[in-house]
Image 1 (cartoon, rainbow, N blue to C red):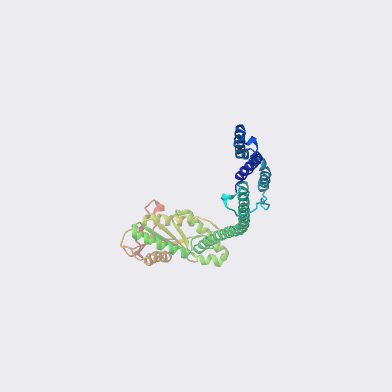
Image 2: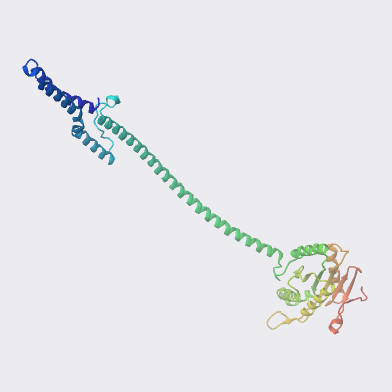
Length: 367
C-alpha cells in the first residue's frame, strides 16, 4: 500500500474516532436532539475528514526524513564507488500497486547500484584486458622495432656489400679489358670493340680504319737492356700513341710489342695522317732506360680503311691490316703500308709529305 494512502487512513481514524466516541456517549442525552449539536457534529466530521485527507501532504515529509537520510547516505557511498552496502528494504520483489514509493525508490536504487557495480566490474576487466593487450602490443612493437633495426642494418650492410661488389666487378671488368703493363686496352677488349665498330660500319656506312704497329728490332732491346727496360719502352710508347690519337680512338696492346689503333669515323686519308703522326712522334722520342741512358726506336705500321661497300668480313679486315704490317717489316721497317681492299693490293706510304708532297700511298715494286 502506498504511503500516502496509509497516512490518509491513519489521520482519518485519528480524527473520526473521538467524534464517534462523543457521538456514542451523547446519543441518549438531551444534547443529541439539540439542532446545534447536529450541526456541530457535522462540522466536526467535515473538519476531521478534511484534516485526514490533507494532513499527509504536510506530515509525509517529516515522516520520511529517516528514509531520505538513508537514501542520501546511500548516494554518497555510490558516489565514492562503494556499491556493496545497499538500502534495507522489506522485500526485493513486490507488486508496484501496493508499493511504498520510497521503498520502491530504494529498491530501484539498490538495483541500479548492483548494475553499476556489475558494469564497473566488467569495465575494469575490459580495462585490464586492454592494458594487457597494450603491454603485449608494446612488447611486440619492441620486437618489431628491433627486427626492423636489424633489417635496416642488414640492408645497409647488403647495400655496402653490393656497392663493394659492383666496384669490384667494375675493377675486374677494367682489369679484364686492360693490359696490366701499359694500362691501355688489351687484345680481348680490342677485338670486342673492333666487332662493335665493324657492325656500325655495315649499318651506318661510316668509315672505319685500323692501324697495326710493331716495334722494330724490339728483341734487341730486351736482349741488350733487359726485359725490365723493354717494359719501360712499351709503357712509354703506349703513352705516346695515346697522346697522338683522338679520345674516341682505341689504342690496344694485342701482342708482346704489337699495338693496334682503331679509328672510327676515319677514312683512308685521315688514317694515313694519323699513322704518319704516330710514326714521327715515336721516331722523335727518346726512351729513357735509366737517368743517363736513352734509346731511339722506330715502328712499322700496317693499315686498312673501309668506307664503302662491298665490305669484307671482320676477320678479313683485320688480316688486311696485318698483311700491310708484315709488308712494312719486309720492306725494311720504319715504314707505313696500306692495304687497299678495292685493289686487293698493299702499297707503301712514301715520305713525300715531309718534303711538301701529299704523302699518299703510291705503288712500289712489291705491290
